[in-house]
Image (cartoon, rainbow, N blue to C red; front, side, top):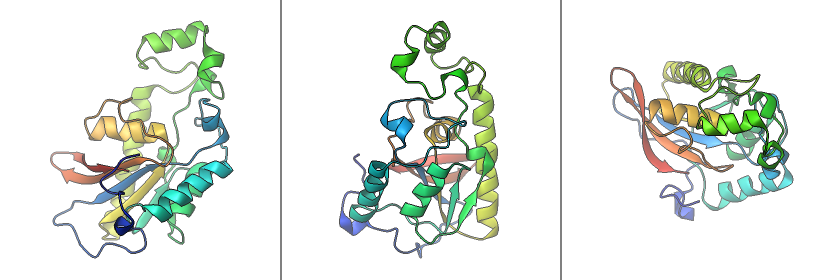
Length: 220
């Protein structure tokens, strides 16, 4: 993963909080996807119904990224309710207090949950979903539009708590779906364009206009 934020050992900034305060009400955000799980390894849909922990390889890869290149510092770390999110936060932001946001959970893949693309090949409902460019609700699962609105609700909740504590740097360690929801809704990216690998993500800055928007500083 290439990133101008993490291209040298000199850029290890996770060890200490930033002393630079942003002007106005803006905030810097490290938006990070959790490490690899067994479902990720096997290319299976791993959503809201799945609470798999990280694999040994997933833990190792996160530790390597943390130690060799680092992640942006954070005064507060937000997670989803899932163990894979909390484990990743523990590894990347050791000894930092975690704040769980219910709305940051992964999307509910419904009948596709726990199945791989190969296993779903030939399933008429899956083909309909593919043909809809992912706009069709997951069978017995979430509707993308409603899911995105719920994630943004959780994001606003996180910002409110951070502002009350007067901090400028936060980390949000969540899921691929959570990241795609935020980036497509608040940063102007396409939903699937915003997809990142395990341990990857975006370094962002909030921009307060009529509504909160997200400006991309770099990719993690």
